[in-house]
Length: 603
Image: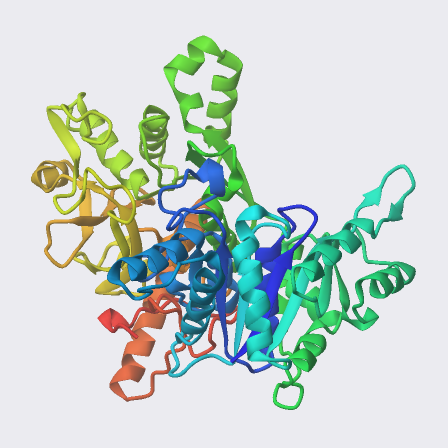
């Protein structure tokens, strides 16, 4: 196993996660199998109980792991399926060591940071690196490790020490350190300044780690004299210093690294020059060029409560982007703070209220993402009501689906006090209830998490067609409340159709309004499985409906499904699509990839 460690210096937010993902993609394009690990030095066991305002979105994995959003970047860039063990936190490490101590595995020893914590970190890295994540058997060739935080942070010191020991233990030729640093340009003099990076590298070397490659963030490409200066003071060859300058979108980063021969420097450091091929990023380059040339806009109103921090909805944004690029549309997101749509805002701040409604009414489609808590709920209900009554394409995810059900019960069934037990435990008409298996005393890891199967009960519904006439889909979940099964008959008799359910038939997963051009709510989170070359079926449907292309998309999906079904009967079908089978035509996610789910075959 070969290891590439990505660290960051000077300031946080330089884009270590995107850099690590891009390095992984570059190595994968060289014919290597790649896996990833993210190290988060915080004491939380996982990201599950953290506010999106605190740390961005919580990304959910197939196995139910609630992890850092950077693992979402790894999965999207590399098209892999990671596990909860691919996210290491200080909390997990200390918990595992303390459990061993209580069992007596350190009997007679004084348990200390060195060697017990540092050994546990190294053992975890080695174990996680061996887990296959690309659908093939056996371990990957290279593991890309990202160390969160900035060099010098107190909380990351045990990991720095462990990684220093680890690099020595695996030996030269098996470990390559890429240090991401900042080269600022002062407006006063207009000169690229190297001193911050010099100090960062000095600190890194003082802690026992020596960088092999410097990835320098700057507004423009590094000048030759700046590279020479960095090489001299940081003891890194000039050819191993790459510039990550500002680009129109992050899909350019792997291309930047390739153009500066970063793969050669990494492969040389890992003794893989003789076994790896030249990088093939043909599809990635084509997709990036299409993204840059898009001019025809499609406006989607994102109605949420965390719109103050865009990273709170990172995967939703990426899924919208993947779908809009697929349909050759330029994505324009209208951020709408849900509470700004409410009557109380009209009284307190009429201008903000008016602006929020203008954004909503000016959008081509409306999306209500997941969330927790009662702030902004009334605004989301009003957004769902507007979309339903005005025939505006609507997609509700998790809480967004529950909101749609509550709004329908209030407006159509006439149950004006209908609500969720999450927001009003004493409501006489609970449309949404706490799931029986949930815990009301422990918050972390107690939700319905990870990939679960949804059976499509109505083969002619829009969702089934978008998924290629599927009879079931496997998508990721994160919720502790569900639509009340006792109210389903009333809702369906009033025109709402619950077309997708779990294996028991009592847990609602997909809801549609057959009379509406596009009104879909899902209990699961389809955004977590969307990929740049293989957009989520439901997000693709939302974008298509928002730009008048839904009918052609549904017809295409149905035709492809029937064609592939015919090939399957002749033993000719080839599946290289996404893990939940959304898209495949044997092109492994090319720009011309189409929708397919195998009619209930999980592959």
